[in-house]
Image 1: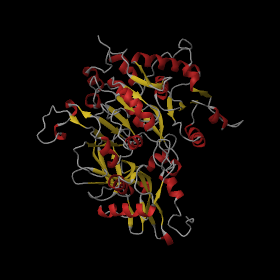
Image 2: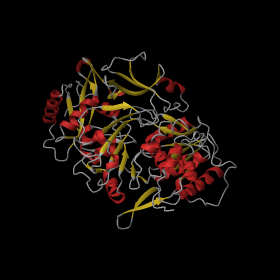
Image 3: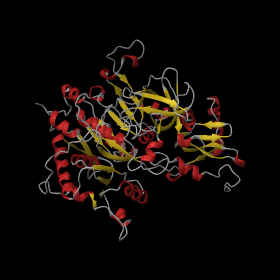
Image 4: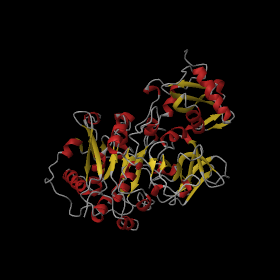
Amino acid sequence: MSVSSPIAPLSVREKFMTEPDLGAGNFLQYALENNPNLDAPLVYDHRLDERGHVALRGYSLRELASIRDRFARWYWANGVRPGEPVALYISEGLQPILHFLALTSLGAIPTLVNDAMPIPTARRYLDHVGVVGVVADDPRLIAATYRPGQPRPRFIVPSSEIRAHDPESGSLPPVYPYRHAPDDVVALIHSSGTTGTPKSTQVAHRQFWVGKESRMVRFPAEPYDRLLSLMPHTHAGGLSYLLTTILLGLPTLTMGSWRRSAVEPVMEAFQPTMVASFPRTFVELAEGELPVRAAAKVHTWFNTGDGAHYGHIRRLVQLGERPSGLIQPWLLPPGAAEDTVLPGSRFIDGLGSSEMGMALFGQVTTPESERDDRCVGLPVEVVEKAAVLDDEGDEVPDGTVGYLGVRTPTRTPGYWNDAALTKSFELAGYWLTGDVAIRKPDGRFYHLDRTADVIQTAEGPVYSLPLEEVLIADCAELVHDCAVIAVPGPAGGGHLPIAVLRLQADSPTRDTKELLDAVNQRLAAAELPLLSAVFVADREEDYPTGPTGKVLKRELRTRHATALTDDAPAA
């Protein structure tokens, strides 16, 4: 049998759709037992060789299992047992995947911590979780925060110690891999912290698989397909794509860096047909000269987390090509044959979060699509009910702004060690996503803002995301990216909207008065509220981002809190 492709046969993928015990804790074992292509490279890593060229290394299912078992022997020998949380404070990429597989094979709970999280924040987070151990690339800084006499984890070790563990040293438990019950917690994933202290979201064995079964036959998995995953594996999106691609046998390269300077050369070497990321990378790829060679084979861009902006999407879908088998008839131009290979790609924008378990809304944009700002599309099949709610949990009429709520078996069991916080996100049987939205009569939903970012003006609420859409799409000659925030107006008359702008490299002006006049003209034409001021972010520190690359609007609100009041510092 040829091992040139690791993709699982269709009969195997169909079987996965109905396996009652399959879930987030044992998906690798199911792939090992059912995919006949055990020795074909499947999960890729990369490095730069001595000449600075990208070198790729692929690991087969058999190799993944071998590394999993070696790591598991170390953890078991060091006392890690089922149900115990272990912190993985290591850089993104392949390494956290390997530790995740090892810990779940023992029934332990990987506590995934973004290595960009500041040490003091990480320490508070780990104390809240109550981890029994910490694995870090460099454990010295986190270890130094524990003073003599303070309770501390049983071990704080460098990740290199586990990688160097002798594969023959130590034993595995009598029952291995661990057999998960449906409700067993298999991972803890923290939120981005963009609206406050990171929350610890529980991922359960069966809950995290529900809703993804259909991907076994719907997700593109042709012999030529390859996925580049830029999703952080400290987020449900990263784990979701990992689970999907290992079961499919879809060749996947995971990257730790999401910056264009690192991503583009890897794309050129790997030639992915699909790219999955948060908006952060898509913003950079859409800047300046487009990465034509790197994206030559891309037919699909997958976005999750926050919705992406149309101004960036419309540039990316110019790249790549869409094979005939991928193109739905309703996406073809009038008169085109169904076997047409179309230039350009499609962008699948999925609104989701770790708490939702997966992207629960989807909107497809192609070069032929009409613009439809802030549309996140229809709920996916697994959603039992999606609604826009008022403060009491009652549905509001179509076209009325309210809280976005979902009823779905994919939602998290709750926040670790925080029943009160879990309850605060529940209303009338719905899980509140933390967003404000409207629904149109045709059933499509539109995402207007995060609840924490709504601008409460004297005239009523203003929603930041529609304003950002206009600034990025309609002021593209000036603005590459932006954040619209609320700041106090003069004399206590409510808040007013301002924008912090990241300008195009060739913007014809950097004068804030000229910029304000220009963007307000476009906002007025779109019949949207006007800005009271704009500020240019010349340096990275002027546009702060959190561990997942999201702009920290709460920090911007603090920095510009006096911008429109009598307390504003002199320019």
